[in-house]
Length: 244
Length: 244
DNA sequence: CGGCTTATTGACATACGTCAACTATTGTGG
DNA sequence: CCACAATAGTTGACGTATGTCAATAAGCCG
Image (tube, rainbow over all chains, first blue to last red; front, top):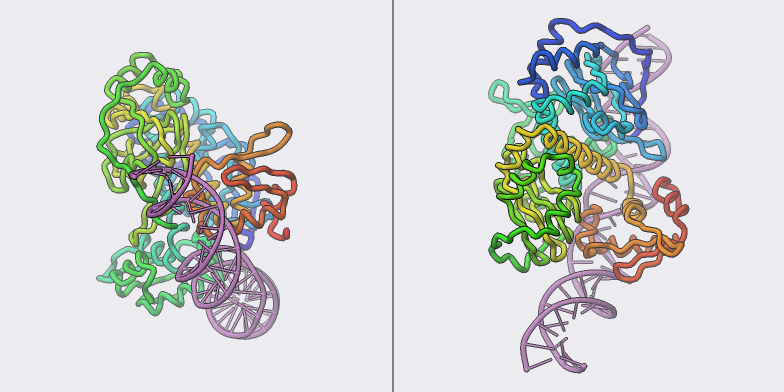
């Protein structure tokens, strides 16, 4: 729960969009099926920008001027309490669209966004997005579907917090992110452990200890690289309270 | 975290919609600004029904066949973990529309819904809702706005869980629900304390103790009726960790 | 290499859950 | 309307998970 520091916060300058950017954007569900004119209208007045690790893209309480699309990299939505401690709500990566709610409702951002690594983002003007949400039925529909998906993410997280212990939440997170490679299940944590701890609702110290505990369940940890020997056992551990 | 029991679960029979039902529905933000034909198309194939306290409207894992609108009463969204403990995600009351995400995505419900008191609900057929989400731009837009609003609720709850202690979450909940009446701030808890405890992420025992703790901060509790003598002090307590 | 940040480990404090007993409240049938 | 059972809520004693503080170790970058 330490404060996430922002090291660089240079004033951003508009960067023009590359063809590769446009190609990526068109594959994102929010933008599929739209008339070319609609996409162009939104993108035409937006821009793309690569920003360094630690950059604060926007701040809690700030007016929602842009809709952000992550092309590469990773960012964290960070909420800050009145006493200046803050918590990571969720991470977003390539293809994710961030903070549609604030943009649609034309409200201040409820949370801040901080880059976990150097990332390339698209900035779409909030007013344009709202206009298309109004004018283009297909876009409005895509927005709903995206929001519906996010709803599920948040509900899942709430339930995990209320029903699972810290080690169980950690194990669940690992299993969700795991990929099979060479007959082995493995995960590469995309973010530093301090932020991961915050996302999982525990202190960094406890994250360390909980990783240690999982090693006794056949999880091997080397820095940010994690290997899962016995996925079945780990899954059982997530569900059942009464495991060792 | 005890299990919410369902006492009555009679098979529901379709109930026709009353004029007063229609009047209520038209005032709900999700339905304002729609062509009369659109509303009629959705409502025409739906129905309204009054169901008793404890009724389980739908179950986790069930396919989303209906979109539910609360006309009167109160329901809880309840998630169940693998080990059969369950947690209240959120309460919904008159004017709220429940589980749009599952309906839109045509996915199974992620959570169940249980009535906290006798309630009158509208059942709209999921397929009809999806069709209008597709066909009617204004409805698609309203859906987005509603989902965006819900997103804020859930994010707030996640942050409170990560950043606040149980007594602080309780105090925050009381302040949010408080109404001014006769120069006094007061709340009437709409649900039983067991469910409230689950919503707030604590045990019923701890809810009792935490209410007791708040009494030392000028909160008077009598059953489900709560009076707040010093809102300023209570607010300070919510924000600051280091209060007595 | 040296300085900085990040991660780990240990000792300790505490908030919270658990279990069990008790009390209050609600509902129901006689 | 009362008596009784069932449920809901409270209280206390206690254990444990998790946070806190401090010191050490391990990466990372200039």
